[in-house]
Structure formats: C-alpha cells, structure tokens
Image 1: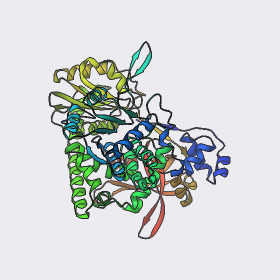
Image 2: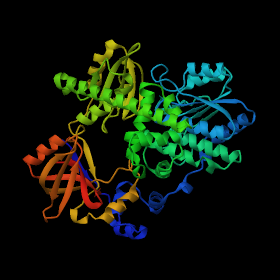
Image 3: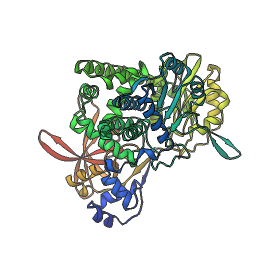
Image 4: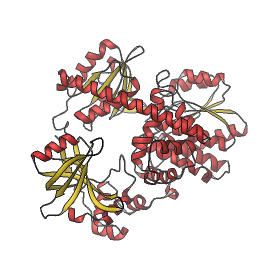
Length: 570
C-alpha cells in the first residue's frame, strides 16, 4: 500500500508568477523543489554556462594545475586512471581529451571490475611504473586509496587525485578525523576544507573543472573544451546526481550539445538505440544510452566504452555501438532471469516475512547484483541485499529505502564481512559463504523498521483539476526540465475520477488506455505503462478512483490532443 502525501509548502505564488512571468502553478512547483529566494529562482529558471563557478575555488586545484602544466612542458608521461562505470569512463575521457589538447603525452587505464575491483590498486600502479609513467591522475576514485597512493609515492610517482566521493574518516571521542590520501594534490569538493560552493558534482564534472582551469593557466581558450560538457551531462545523469545547482546547467547545456554531437561513437550509439535525437532528454541517458555504456564495465571491460568515445571512423563507431547495445541486451536478459529467481525464492520461503531481504543467488553474475537488488526493492519496498558466489567467497550489493540507513546498519555487524562500503541508500560487501545465514539473521534482528516505514511514499505536488490542463501549461512545464533525481517531474493528483472504456493496447500489450471523467464531466484521455493487468483489474472492479498523473500532448498523425500519463492509482 502506498502513502500519498501532498506538498503544502507556502509562498506568494501569484507574486512569484508575476515577477518571473510564469503561472502560479509553476511558481508552486518551483517552491515544492525548495527553490527559495530571488537569486535561486532566477538561477533555476535562467542559469547559463556563465553562471558556473570557477574551478580554482576548489582546494588544491591550484596545485594540481601547477603540477600538470609543468609536467606537460617537461614532456613527462601522464596516465589517467578512472573507474569502470559511466561516470568514471566519461571522466577518464574528459581528462584524456583535455590533456591531449594541451600537447601532453597522456594515456589511460581503467580497472577491471572483477579482477581489480573498484579504484586504484597496486597492480595498476605497478603497470604504470613498468610503462615509464611519471604522473598518475585519478578520476572518480582515489579519495579512499590512502595505502595505494602511499605505495605509488614510495615508488617515485607524482599522484593527483580528482574525485567526488565522501572523504573516509574515523571517529574519536565524537570528533571526525578525516583520512586524506597523501597525494601531491587532492581535488574533491567533499574535502572538509574545500570552500567550493556546490558539493554535488560527479567525477566527470570535477575532471572538467580541472581541464578548464588548466586551459586558463596555459593560456589556451577553455571554450575549445566546451564540447566535453556533453560527457559531463551523460555522467551526471548516469551516476544519478541531484539535478540542482551547477548540475542543472551542465545537463541542460550538455543535452543540447548531445543533440548535435560531433562524437562519432555517441552519434552511432544514439542511432543504433533508436532515439529520436530532437527529443533526446535525461530519460534516454538514464535508461537507454547509460546502460549500454555501463554494460561494458559489467560484462566485459569498460575500455570498450572508452574506445567508443575515442573512435574517429564512422564504420568502427557503428560496430562498437552495436557491440555495446548487444552487451546491454544480454545484461537485461540476465537481470530478468535473476529478478524472477529472487522473486520465486522470496515468495516460496520464509524470506517473505523478513524486513530486510537477503537473497543469495550463487549463479548470478556479480556485476548485476545491484541492479537486481534495486528491482526487488521497488517490488517489495524493503531494503534488499543480493549476494552471489564469487572468487574467494560471497559478494553482494544492497539497495535501501528512505527510512533505512543501510551503511550504518552494516557497521553494526561489520565483523561478518571481509570487506564492505557504501552509504545510506546503497552498499557493497564481501563475506565468507558460511556467514550468509548469520548475516541475514543479524541484519534482521538489528532492524527496527515500522509498517509505515515500509509503505512507499508518493510525493504529490498538488491536486490539479482537469479544467486547468492546457497546451500552454504542458509547454510551461518544460521550463522545469531537465528532470531527474533532486528535480523530479511534477506529479499532480485528482480524486473521484470515473474510468471509462479501459483497454490494453500495443503489440506487446504493455500500455493501458482509458478515458477519465471528473465530477464536472470534463474528460481526459489517460495512458498507463506499469503493471497493466493489475491496473485493468482494479479499474473494472472499482470504476471511480483517485490517480496521480502528469499531463502531456499526444501527437498522432498530425493531430495534437491533451492526455495524462497515470503514475499511481488508488
């Protein structure tokens, strides 16, 4: 059962509307997103590239730029070491392009997910030394690699860290002591001593800021690198960063650039996945392009996705793009099988009575455990760990719900793990096989979630009668884009709607269509894309219902009509 909550945030919506030439409805939606005060509203509605902060405001940025400009002049060999996910791959590409554009002798390395694990390790450092590398620049990793960086420094390497993850710390007498790696420069907006005004950047955005600062210092035009903003946009959405502040501008501008991209690989990937390039938006990055880029790091090597970004010849680009799409298709099939197996296990055993679901799927590919955990979490709305058999024991990924701080709960049974890490909403872990049952029992014994905690909360912006829905409103809602985490698509609600002629359509029978009529006789066409069979059954048993929805314009054979997309129903 869902808990529907309508936002009741107060402001003078008419005054805001008049000041910014928007409707009171839009003013209310902006207030619901906690955008308060003239400066913030103006930035939200009208922010451009000119409003981005100077990267030099980041702690150690000056040192990083000074070291790199010297290394470039001295023709020293530089290696960029990234990570195997969408953020790490794009960050690696941005640094490689930026450094090459300044004439640096720069190459790249990305760890193998299964062989190397996440981030910097000794093998990568030894490989760099064997290859005659002088300087390592990390991106989207490095902040937690204290021992590895100390090892690299011992061996005579220069090391620059660029990262966006939280700085690890130990707590002594209630005081946090932050453990910064002893690199030559550490650029990370989460450093406690970093005064950079916006903390929510992804790894690729931090890399972009470094490139921009380096161009300024070396007296090259940083606008030459503007095209890399499309990679920042892909990484920001793909790494599920909040689309607020600077991220909003990066994604807004990056999407426009992506529509006209000169990058052969991205062009080929957009074509082979069948995206209408003029309508390209955050959904396509999050659910179409992003998974293809991520699939290489999951099932093969992330170097293939990096190769796609670097490819110059059209023919090679098409081949690489098709390879990545095929990889992602097989990842989808593996995911579906894993989800079905997990659901069967939960439904047929005592697992279904647990508040925290610990599902052991020995044969599942370890790289998709997190995706399966996310899907199971959506289905049961409980914290979920999916464990798989790996080399030397059991590995797993967890996904959480709003009311459950997964990482802090895991800290309470840390003795059971050989390795673990994460944050409130997601985590990774390794443990011995004989501890799987103990982990399930312990994490559940520690859990104090209530029934209400395990009800999914649906946050509604406002009740909106059908008579308010016009083409002008639908057009005006576009001012709030790009949508994503931290800037959700508006959600409206209306009750006492009569459902007329509901039916399932489409060649895959995956769309439900109906007509909705309010108490005043206003009618609106509705479409639903969720579990259509359950929805149809509900509509047939109870023809008067409440719905959450967002409005859109449906264009079909040259005809435009208003419709609502149903999101939830009661």
